[in-house]
Length: 226
Image 1 (cartoon, rainbow, N blue to C red):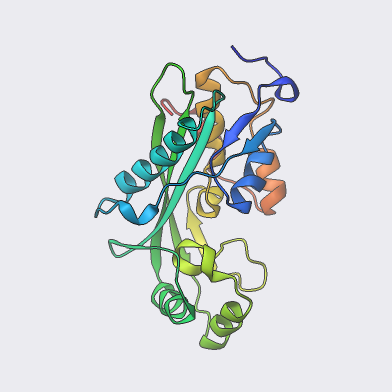
Image 2 (image 1 turned 180 degrees about the vertical axis):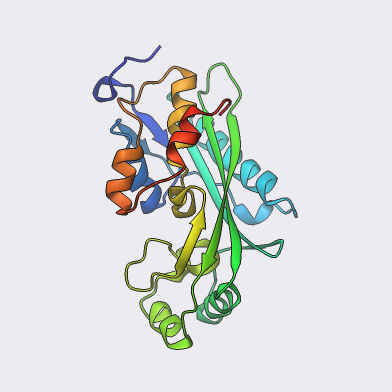
C-alpha cells in the first residue's frame, strides 16, 4: 500500500496543533501534514490515566478521519499524573504555580495515549505509554521566572522537560520523547506494523534532537506487540 522509502511515502496526517509533536514527527524523516482535531478534552473524565489518554487520542484521530482524510492519521494525548490525580494545562499563573510546587522534588507519571488510524478499513491502533519522572528541587523564584516567560500554559502539568533554562526534571525512567508528547519509537514500530515504511528507526535522530542518550529505544523496538 505504501512505498518503501520515506521520501516517497503518502503523507501522514498529524492530528495535533502541538509544535513539539510536529518537531518529533519530523525526526521520522517522512512527509506529513497537520490537521488539527476539534476534540474537547474536558469531555472525557476518569481515574484511569492510561484509558483516558487512549480515549482522547482515539477521539482526535477519529475527528480528523471524519473530515474525509484517507491517509494514515497519528494522534496523541499526554497526561501528567501526580499521586493518582491527572493534571491538565494550567488556565492561569496561579494554577501553573500550584502545579509546579506540587510536582517539585517528587515523582510523577507522564502518560501519552497514541492512536494510529488508517480510515479504511481498520480500527485505530491505540496504546498508552508511561514514563516515570522525578523533578528537581527548583525554587519559587525559578517558578516565577518560568511563568513570566509564558511557558506553562499550553503544557500538561505546566512544564516542558526540554526547557533548557528551567530544566525542571532530575531524571526519568522510560521514553523521553513521551514526556514531550509523542513516544517516537512506539510510533515508528506501529507504522511499520501497519505497512508504512519510515526509512530508519528514529532513535539516533531523537538522541541528536534531545541531546541525550536513550537507554530504552532498543528494548521498545525489539519488543513484541505495539
